[in-house]
Length: 390
Image 1: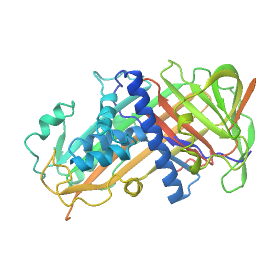
Image 2: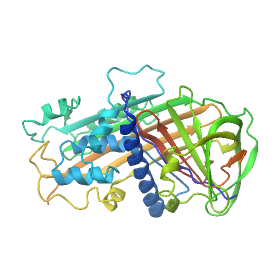
Image 3: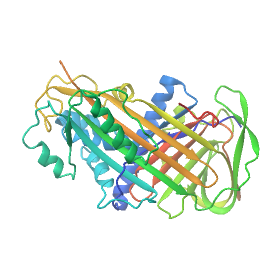
Image 4: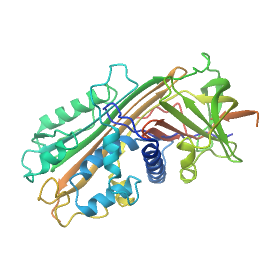
């Protein structure tokens, strides 16, 4: 079987998650899986990279926070772009899902956080601060053209990701405001893989073959789904609140970007059933990052520069979305998974059978999710497990 490119849409934010109703969780997961599929497909088409990872959760947090002050048209565009369709309040539910009543324990599997920083030269409308307070958000106000803003925002991201992502900005962001979403995840598998990982062949997307350490797990404690083209496992973590779906191909060239929309229900963990199975999965780690703004423009989140105030809930000044910077990391081994993600939305002042085998020996997809809230913590495509990324 050819190699696998890991589908990873890493998402969450550094605040303990509040419990969600089943219906809310299902709607959230559907939106997040659709967002992951589109982000990865468009990024793969644009970059052609072997490995891609995005964070739907941290993106939903940062854009959802910005949407609180957006115009009616902006709210519609952001909700649609984040996968909520006509549910304009969808981005707000993402913020609510990530609210923490109190600081999480130091060893909590998942921590999430959101924040917003306004430029001290931006004139806020009278109701802006009270509106944000209604969503339990206390903004910072500082000089976004000055170097200290870089230090402060990077420090926040480093703390929010428990040190996994130390830097999100390289220079002062400028503009009117920066909204932020971040997460940190670390958990052990419910059932650990075998200690020894023998080397096995893995086919990369370009057709070449490499030898990689292949983790192995056999037994009847996992849930599986398969059809004539794909085979998948839903790997549970200790505690029962999180799981990772891994989707591999039965043959061919591995999972591709064009497959992702068809695999959306798989990534959501639907129609998996307990069965006796055997799993072969390479250890992998990945650091990824990019400006998502071109991809989001193609998705219709910000189709054109605002001709009027784009965020009247915050200010009457003419500002619009400029950059959406995201950095992600993930490490998967025999014991469990560590992952982190941070997204910074930056604005600018605008002038205008009995044994089921899941063998990930070619490009494969994965999706790490919070089964309580429906947030998709990570998803991506991995085509070269030995390529850690920059």
